[in-house]
Length: 298
Ligand code: ZN
Ligand code: FE
Image 1: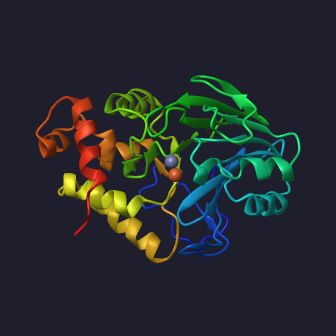
Image 2: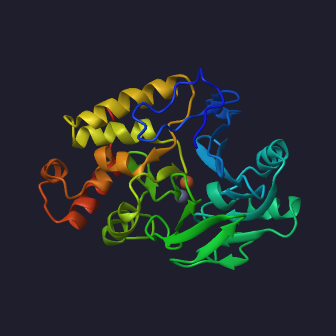
Image 3: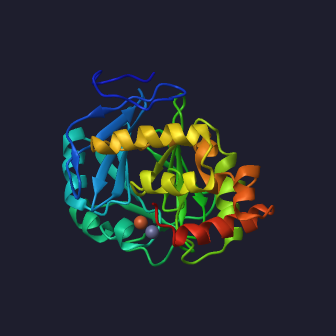
């Protein structure tokens, strides 16, 4: 059962399955203190804003009170959150080796002994459990599945976390963002197509998407350049701007929502194909990524 801790906080506007937030502060630009938790009776996901626009996430198994942290780049902040929740950290789940995601691993391991540090790339600091596509882990009673999504980096992993009853949580790092995707630093359009269309799009539609950065408004500006008449997109942009004006996160969305407005999840849609005058979804993927790389909103 989803429940709401603070009834005054406006929530996601089109929440198929009432996702509700509670708020303990305000994420000031560049100096974040906000932490938002979205939870059910068995799993709690706590958003921990970090650096300029990164997100770390704490996942808690409510039954065992064990926890994992995704990309703990600011270890002190993580430690405070662990104390506040009074939970036992067992795992670090690293999405990829970039410093703004993996840069806190070594320090975190000094602060908390005996951690299992997961990731899919030998360049990840303090890595002691290399994972591959389809590998399964347990955080307390929660099931974690590792999904290999190379392209932004060649060792990128997304993590799907499931309990018995509530919507699964998908941690997408810098592969899938709300309204966009990561740059193809080490991979090809074919690989991002495999990641987004052949893997992530096939997960349950009601999966909540928790990505590595608060880039939603910028991403939707480009999406509107591709599909100016997409009503779901126009609506999401209005909502996202409203959230950011109040320093509130736009995270999470759902896979279902992303399929409605994220051009990188819509490479088979005629409107997106017409924009780049191409029909092959892999070529469309390459063309829109290339355009977005240099896109400057008006
Ligand atoms: Zn990155
Ligand atoms: Fe990043």
